[in-house]
Length: 579
Image 1 (cartoon, one colour):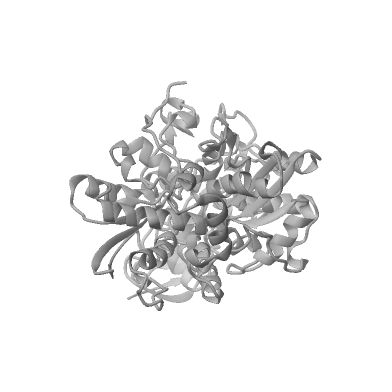
Image 2: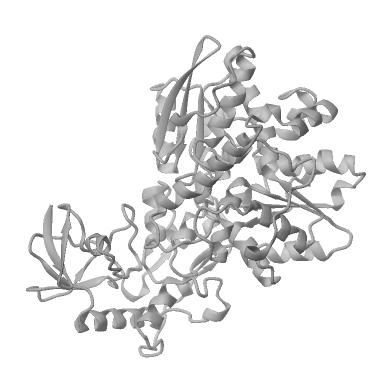
């Protein structure tokens, strides 16, 4: 331990701790616009400068180490003047249409500008040439709001291992862009949206679809159906000033009815169908010498990554559609028939924690119709509710509709890393060994935030080895091992976003000082695990609606009829696409 003083307060911290961390340990917040612990520690923004007694220059607290006997001042007149000037210089090259910006009131630059009583016009003058890129289905890049914090660069390169954006040119012309200023759609970007979550301003944001949904709801010729992903219930409440960890699914159901949706379903239900197909596909591969390991196919960011980077592993991917796409296929292929509706008149909306889902909806079609017509992220749903004056906090709870409103606990845990694996194991155990005891419900070994988790289970006299991966930088390590024959897994789950869907690119954006990202991920995942524990039925194959639909419409899981409706295919794609 080392001792120092911060604002004349004694502090004791471990050696190697930065001044930023030391100050936080005693409840003092040093502002920063670029820092993300263990991801981005560049000291690029210079907003976090502090004064150290005996030093001529101010130092960046986010990267400067605490040392024995230091005397540090975070609020001296010199420090406050420097911060204010730095923020005003940033504002001089920043588009200031705050009232029409989607990050209004949730913008880190806006908050600091107000806190330090900044003059946004003090340094008005020349501005850079700004790039506006809306070439993808999921992200808009607006450099007129970029403050060169480089958070997006760090999260894309270090956390995800993609690295499609970086700093181009030098000096005043410096800007964040793709190599050679290519459009984002022409790069290896997988659409995870993690850059939008860490961006402190509105320079990177989700491409909205709220207007399309509102137009469909207002169209008397459209039968508009909605389904909510498991992770949304664990996060939407945060957009309405409720604490992290509130399960608001009952209120979401009511809010969606107020918006005018004809049927309120739950994507948990189609997650149960996914497990029925995926678990049986795994069992078939093991029994018949199929391609192993089998990789899960629920995460569209991972599918994009595999198609662009590992074409030799495409046969290892489960052919199952994701729960989102299965949801749309089942609504148009089964529900429409039951209700005597023309599938062309059914408009399917999914509420997702993920930006890559917006691109995924373009991938799969049933009878030449898109399975899903529109995707709203958690943040988009919050904006839609607020725009319509719906106060989520004050709503009563209500239930989902039949038949795609019934789900098991296995469907709920899809939103946490390891959840798909655990749900599949619950069913695979029963398929492989129908006489197995039903006590094994929780597979703790595949839970948690570790980048790569490995476990082995004895099922029906054979050892089944599994791996659970979250974060694409970790996926690369596992894929390389599989290709080199250095592992003998049977089943591998991959989630693009660290922590799984609970930390997806469409989830609420939180200031890092409020809670560390790992703590937020654990708390949100805890909502799903608690909901699972509270369920009477915790296995997908025991869902009575799933059983009924298989009997009436689909036949056997992984059979010909089910395969036609619920499965898909993949194709190798180049990392870079010419315009």
